[in-house]
Length: 495
Image (cartoon, rainbow, N blue to C red):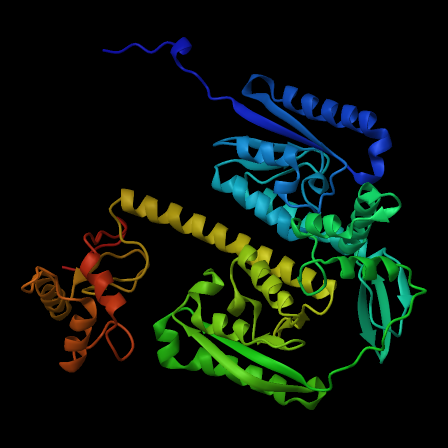
């Protein structure tokens, strides 16, 4: 008999990794800001009592929050040190990242290591799906407010770096792009640091910028010529060439279904295609459909490389063209992957339009709407998946049937929670599938699932659903090892 005392039980303490960032514009008040944020972080950790300890506290002075992690030594150290149950603790989410994509990359890397992110000022915690949703929503809302509060100027020339355009009734209004404006601040600072004998070394400045997430319009690399041009045109009194407007918008349509059954019925595919063609045929949209691709039986959470239809479309995108989809859910059901798709389309100097939601990426408001809808959809999927797994575990523990009725079985009655009984004809087919799979050829290889599907279709054996057998269906039937047939105790089984 073993006796366990309370002294033998050790609770694992949570390690907090603090991060402080002093902005470029506040270097003169470095000590004050650092002291205040350091005090806030230490007080927050102390409020957790003996359950937590401050393992690391790093600071980046004069580093912009739009820089990548590798260009910020303090944040890089903190991220690399975080392990399982570790917490990245910052005073504000804006200290960690100012660009939304960089914030997602950092947050995803921390989650992969088993840690999470906490911001003291906003009081957000990504250890739960609710906290993650609130932090993302707050982040993109702050970006939207920055855009709404920025200065607007009437403009009739090519829009310079640092500004965005909004065209209404043939009049062009431009407003500050806060990311590019902060990039301009960094460019001016770098030019001052690389001035030798009253001459600026633009090559060093361009090399530094190419190592950051600050990109030129269109995602291209920086050069000395472009830096000089950006600095010259930073003043809006400078004029440029008139904007050449393209009269026809060339569209690349994308449709997707998640299962083979949806493809076989054709309803979902045809509905999506009709919606895309209707939109492009509308003379008010001034559009022309030049290409239409589809991905069949492919999940919306997969990356671009795993979706041949979408990959082919993006590779063929031309400048100023449109990637057109019926719904955001057809493009992606994963928040991070949707952002990657939008960024890839932007790199081709093109845009994306979702018809049913009426959203596009021509301006920051449309991108904000897509981000919010994708984030809410992903959180809902996570919650549904969590509840389904909990219910399945409960039913499995009670040896009761849960979910759809597997092939070879049927419900005893129509009552919810009733047990299952065998279907003799289908049980014979299951035996045939397993016998064929157990048969080995001269090389010792098992009979392939596509070959079994071909034989069953040839002999016109009725499939579980639809009109044909598929290799994936046969694999699922073959691999199923256990079926719970017990129903609810309050339902009497028929004699």
